[in-house]
Image (cartoon, rainbow, N blue to C red; front, side, top):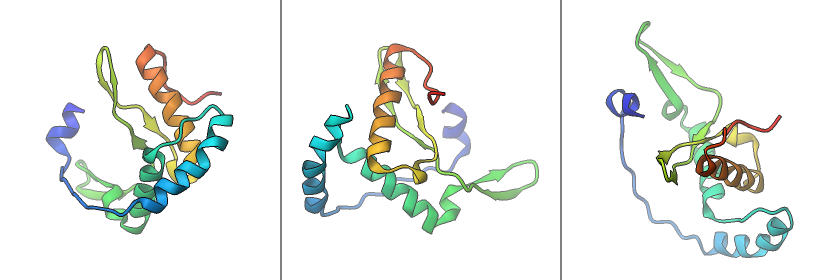
Amino acid sequence: MQLSKHKAAHFTFVEEVEVDALKQLIERAKPAAEQHGVKLHFLPFIIKAVTLALQKHPILNSMLDEQTSELVYRHYYHIGVATATEQGLVVPVVRDADRKSPLAIASEIQRLAEGARTGKACRPPS
């Protein structure tokens, strides 16, 4: 993360969004999610929206190859989720978030956060 802080372009974007319909959707879907042992919240939907935005604006999912001075467009969508642990901030990654449903993303966030907090590897299960 230190290297990223010094080399990557950083910006902050703030937008107010009407989420009443999303709140209602989450409330309706919570019982089904809980049957699968998943706590449903806003974050999986935000991650899904981010992947859609990155697909629409691919330059935001690119990186500069410093050796060739070329912009490299990534065609995968791995989204880091900051997790507070006793050892400090850890950022496990939801891989291929664009291919997952919000429920699957919520399940993955739950698994990754638990792994980060217990100090276990956060690799996908085999």
